[in-house]
Length: 143
Length: 112
Image (cartoon, rainbow over all chains, first blue to last red; front, side):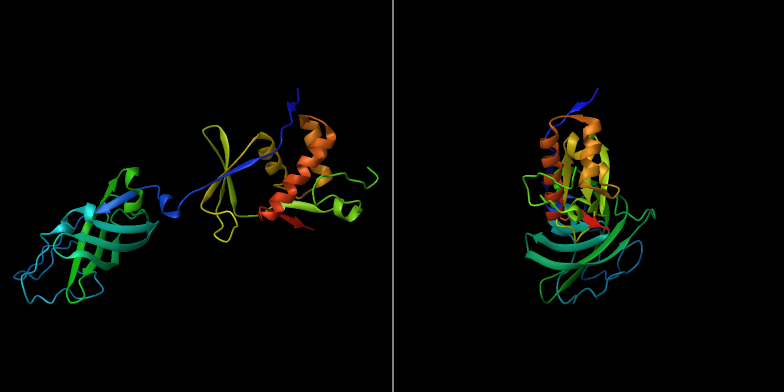
């Protein structure tokens, strides 16, 4: 039996590019450098593209960078960009992405991988590293 | 057919050469069944349609598959008539419209 002919139609559903992130993630800083302790605890060593500092006054990572919710990244697959950190002390800190360690070697930025990035207030630079944490789809703009 | 094709759209032509034109879906699209529904995903960044998913209805999905291989308007109409019930004139107009709009959206291309 033949099917009934109807007008052929194609519905085109457009979406924002940054919503096309299948797996969304976030990162909180784990670095422990301070004014007194200037050697990083980063598991994979220093992969930053710039020097942290200057350590000319009290300096630490015990601030808002610890909280992954404050660190805004944009990621399209393995193309990662750091946008900014919302800091209670420093305001909105810009910066940049430095490195990604694909810990499980699967070619995907996913849980347990390590990301290196930095923030700067124009005169001082903070180097950060942290573990990728997978979050839910409600955070599509966060990664 | 005598080379006469009556259409509502711009493709309407009495010229045999127009009727002999073959069309094919451009590369850069993947078709997947998602939830039992045919879904077309444009992968080519230069495509006119990007950051989108395309959901054809049954007849558009049939034509999409048909134009997976180079096919003339007339061949497509004949294949549709074998598969579907409907007024031939309407089917012919609809297939021509599908070709016209797909060419405009750079989904379909003319092939030799």
